[in-house]
Image (cartoon, rainbow, N blue to C red; front, side, top):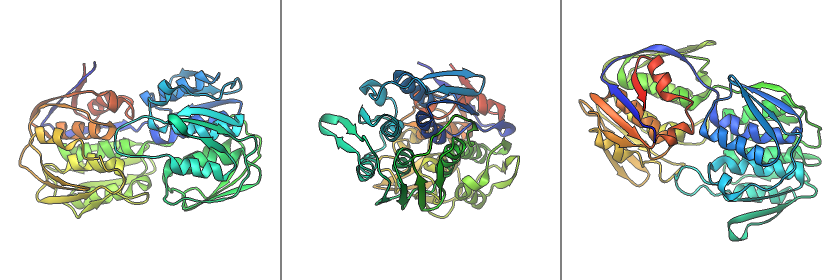
Length: 416
């Protein structure tokens, strides 16, 4: 099993091009099923979760192949409607295929999805919304048996702005007759990217980025060539790496408007962050300052995916910072591993207080989940000596090659 070895204590200096967004490309891959045609996705990151999505597509009779950084998907040969339990367990977002399969095939059969163990992430909102569109769903025994010979558009009001439910309903609505309106929709940039992809394929979708998304169903979709947006959490990771270790970096293609809550806090902590059309620059001194309380919230609030990463950046700050996790209840599993490196963190329920220490030291640690693993990399760059990070399969779910990128930014990181 691969491990990362990171030697910290040095300042960063360098440039890297930010990869395509994991949380954008996965629903887009599901959306390719609606086209029955060939789609070319440029800037598609080569990740474990992308590989899992490709295996799902292939199991349904589709074809996919890579050419450099472009993934070509041909869904004309779709012949199945069932996803095996083994494939569903590989990633949480596999549930996104449900809406697209129903829209194309009129029926679907799949088990409940897997993924990082961050606490309950029920797909009840997905299922209730699909039922509102006319789907009949039997979820007995952990398997979803779904039938929808005809989906009909209508207004759906989500009880909370779930990203996955918004995406699933957008895909299903493309195959429904009439207009579907999704109220209290998630507003994340990845929702906008999905809308832009669907529109490029001939769909009529509007409102993404606001709390109301409208889909005029029944349009015949076609293939296209599409470039995936840059990953805002990968961007946040490398900004926090520079903040933790000190130095000056440039992240090409990064978009500050996608993570302004993160850059605002980094500026408050003492970093100099600037952005233009080409990307984002960040420079930091030796130690950061503690910041106002950080409370995760749905977009445009502070992203839960950046919580562990920012926490790692503030481990050597002057003062104490309060974190409040309001999205997932088990999102502090990385704390014990950071403590091994000398961090001072107190956790009570959904709150964690980080009190900055003078120095961190390298230690053997293990990834507990995707973003927790990235946080260990950030902390390792600020620590004295070498840190060995195991179980990096979690990191591979969201980072194309984190060791390569950290080296490009001036870090000492090796994958063994």
